[in-house]
Length: 300
Image (cartoon, rainbow, N blue to C red; front, top):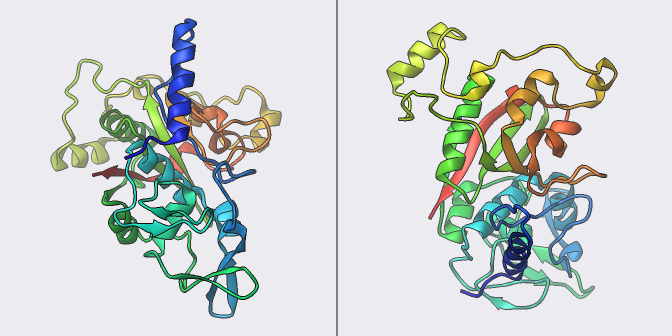
């Protein structure tokens, strides 16, 4: 399989930083769906599909609601997987095994629905649903992987950090952390965690009995993260900023342990391999660490 140019560039950059004595993160892929997509968009803006009387433009859907397909693309690209069968990339006209990026993940998500070019030079897909709403089986089949989901909605932030830390250490290619608050949702790729899993305790997975005990004794029963040992502060350092921050001071205690690739990169808030507190989800999303409901990871 040909090495991806983006990964090669990242590897070269990491080597240069290492050579000059500057610490650098492990090689990783970063895609953003906002404000400017950083993957080839030739012809993508011309691709639509119909859902009843509505027309879905794929460029617009990835741009406005494509955080999850973009997260999936980052993780699958880090896993170095391509489509399991030869497909044509309408952006370039190339036919072959396609590497994972937000468009190819969206394409796989539709089950590789047929795409035709009409007399006006536009492209029309036969798909009849929102192309960026995840269809897990289609992505699994399309890239030869298995997506796993861990539901952590009912647990507190300490337990959520524990699970995120454990899975991120097991999957250095990245895991997807999904936030849900009312009608709002967002996903980020967690690349690293600096939280400790043990602090002298066992790091074996919790048994059903342990989870039952934990649920019955919260917050007395501590789990094995630094954030659980620290008593979270509820004092807002700058009350005037609270209304503008997605994360309050308690959220930040947990978020400070995580390095993420956030697909939304607004204004000066970078999403590429930054502390969760400094990413979009921590700055502007109006969601909290406690709103994390699921973790997704892939195996191949």
